[in-house]
Length: 353
Image (tube, rainbow, N blue to C red):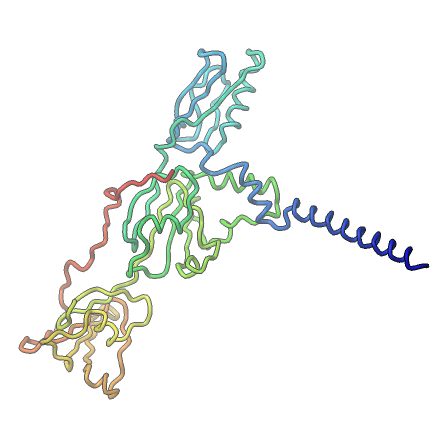
């Protein structure tokens, strides 16, 4: 083979390789290569918010006629009642507008020629509200009209307070959301799709769910720790159990026992010792086995490493003695330390749309 033929053969072979690579690249770009891509395509066809919930105002419009139009809400059992010329009540809870329209069309086709039915959710404002409470800066209620996840809800509420224990619990009542129906739809479209909601640590109780989330998992970006919040969800950022520091400190206060806290650290978090404090007389009142245990400590000896820095327990009361005042022998009665808002009905309402 001469050099000219060899050159042309090499060019032809190179073009063939480039053409094959181009075809493979197109196939790769047009075909989803993982479950996430497939899931996003299917989820775009259905959303939990678009389905009919309790409290929604629904309209059935028979196009070209006013005689058969209907407007109303679901019954407590989830049916649309009072729709004319329908043999039996139409079940509407967690059904799409298209599903209801197809159902009504089937009934009306018996006496109308090619009926055109339009079903629309007119008002979603009466859906059950969601509640966020506990160790957040602004506990409040939410009227959810669009998809929203836990992290966004926490940001809207000003973030976590220093009382947060490290755990969040979501109570999800039965039938106040349509997540189960969306899951069934996804399963029917592709059994291989991984639904993130399945991997959240949860337990069932008579159809309702309790979902437990670690705040550390949420902060590190784990997808399963950031579930979508639905209508009717009650989200509680759990508060750490308290430790109280009183007496001869600059800022007597309640601190949270999220981690192991030593006596010296607790006193430091309360602003340190006051001018009249007696650091040699520190009393820890600890409740154990239905009785109060009294532990004496000397801060001077702890600083000199002559005594061990005591690790505190939840509900400990640390009292730093003051010079010239009588030493207490019984646990003090604490007041005005719990400032949490226990009346959820008075929480402000925010609309998420």
